[in-house]
Length: 199
Image (spheres, helix red, strand yellow):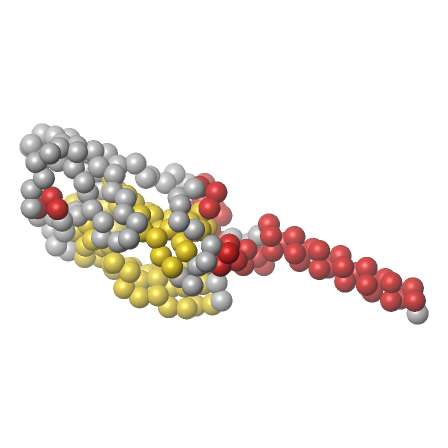
């Protein structure tokens, strides 16, 4: 009887250790389904379009820690009224729960420029906490939009599914995440950054 109890206790300890290791490393049912996407190139640098028509002559790197509608900041000193409006507006329309660590996120991108934009692709990454350290990335996705006429909007829904260990990491960061959205067009690349409390 004592031997059976010892074997049962040993099996229970080994099983618990195995499940804990799988949780921490994200293996098995705790795996990250987006791991295949994480090796793809992810544009985050902003380049200026060619200055053939006297337009935007400076590079821009849009980062804003509080608003998803942060805009393009020009390096030249003559900012006009039209330059104060960001070229693209990004709005999260709806977030629906699709599981314990899963959310369906519906968002809209709007071309707020007076000109059409071609070859638009939106890349999004989510990081744990308030930084964009590559080691803190828990999700990434992209959506080819194509051409957006001036004033036109494009709405899509993406499933954001985290592993249990990634969701635990977000919880350990008091529910704070950083969302980095890069909009790449034929002319330029703009990056918007926003922190959110999802607790």
